[in-house]
Length: 120
Image: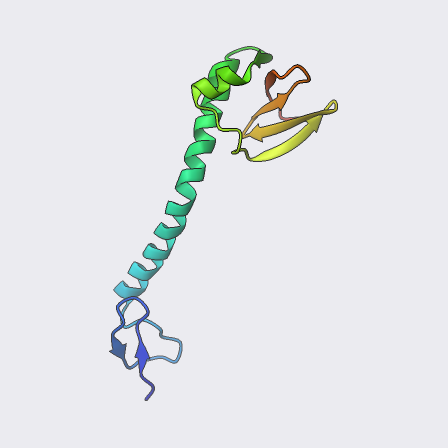
């Protein structure tokens, strides 16, 4: 029989099947949970920045169709310009999008914030 080493615990075992890589089911579950947690931890920082930026855009826009804010206002609220989901061009304006909101730099150094409609 072939001996194998459990990737989670490092223990040596003899597999009962030729496709068995873990000594038992609990080790397999723990190993997969550990790998998933590593991925979640890597993404958590980015997700927190994006969520914070989205909250700032929601608070700034309120019920308006669009608002104009300066960079100091956005930075003071904690907005991080390095984090966004996608880019979109509407009427020759290049928007950085976070969920259903967008922000673009205007010619005078101010920023325009809009909420995207579903049909754009």
